Length: 435
Image (cartoon, rainbow, N blue to C red; front, side, top):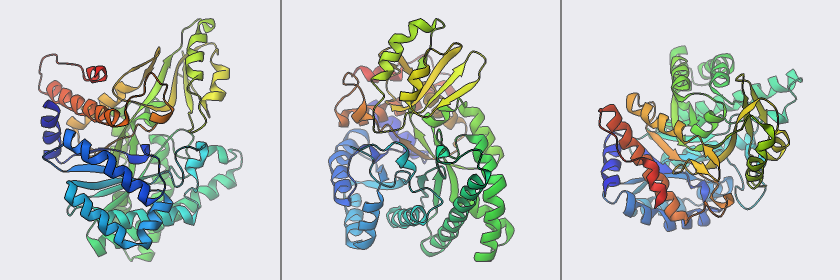
C-alpha cells in the first residue's frame, strides 16, 4: 500500500508520527491501557506493519499516580510495548483531570502553573516518559500556557504579575529537575508549552515576550544558584527543556501564518518540541448580515457543553475580535464588517467542508510543507479530539477515523515531497475522505 511507503520514508528521516490518545475516554490507568490495547495493534498492522509505531500518550493525574505507586504496571506496559512494536515518544500533559463526558470548558487549565499540583503532575509524567522512552530519543510533554486569561482581571496588574512570577518559579524548578533527570537517566525530556486562545500565552509574540522578560532572566539566576551552572549552560538548559508545542489549530485561530511564526520563534531561539496537527473550524461571513442566519444555525449545533470553543473574528480591516465561547459569539454573528470566524473546534483533518463551513486544513498542509524545507521538530501528533461531539453526518467509526487522519497526513507529506521535487499534479489528499 502506498501510504506504507510514505510512512517508512518518513520514519527513516527520523520523524515520529502518532495521534494523541486524549480522544479516548478513561482517567484510570486500566482504562488507558485497555484503550491502547484496543486501538494501537490494529492501527499498526494497517499503517506500519514492518516498523515501530509511536504513541501519543495522555495520562490523567490519577493514571500517573497509579503508575508511580505500582511500578509493576509500568514494567508490564514496557513489555507490552516491546511485544507489539510500539513506543512512547510524546505525552499530553495539558488536561490534568477528566476530559470526557463532563463539562470541561475552562477547567482544562486547572490546576495552572501557579500551583504545586501542576508541577508535581508534570514531573511525574517526565519520570514516566524517561522510563518508557527508547534509548537515543528525546521525549516531549505538552502543557498548559501557564494559566487562563479570563481568570485574571486585566486591570489588576498585581494579580497578573503574581501569576507570571509564580508560574515562572515553578517552570524553573521543573527545568532544574529535568537537568537532574538527564544526568541520572541520559534521557532528554522537554516540556512543550502550548499557546491557545485565552491562555495566558496565546501566540508567538506573547511566548517570545515571556521568554525574554520572565523565563530567561529568572531561570538563569535560579539554575546558576541551584545547580551551580554557568550562565551559558543555564540558558541552554532552559531552551532545551522548555520548548513550544505548535498546535496548528491554535495558531490558525490567532491568524498567524505558519512560516512567519516559525521564523519568529527560530530568531528568538525558541525550539518547537512538538507539532500538533489539528484544524480549526472556519466560516466565511457574507457581507449581507441578514444572510448569515444559515451559518448561525449550523454553528449553533456545534455549541456543546464539553469543551471551550473560542471564536476569533476578523473584520474587513483585518482587526481581530475574540469571543470566549461559541454560545456568546453567536449573539454577534450579524456584526457589520465581520468577514471571517475561526472557531476552536478540532475538526478532522481529512475534509475541509462541514455543512457549508470550512476548516483551516490549509494551514496543516503548509506546516507539513515547511517541515520538508526546515525540520523544526521530529515530533508530530494528530490531535483531533472532538469525535464524540461532532454532528452525526461527520462521525465515522473511531478506528477508521484515526487511520484516515494519519493517512491524510502521510499523503500530504508525499505531496510536499513531490512539490519540492517538481513532480506533476497528483491525487489530492482529501480524496481519502471519500473512503
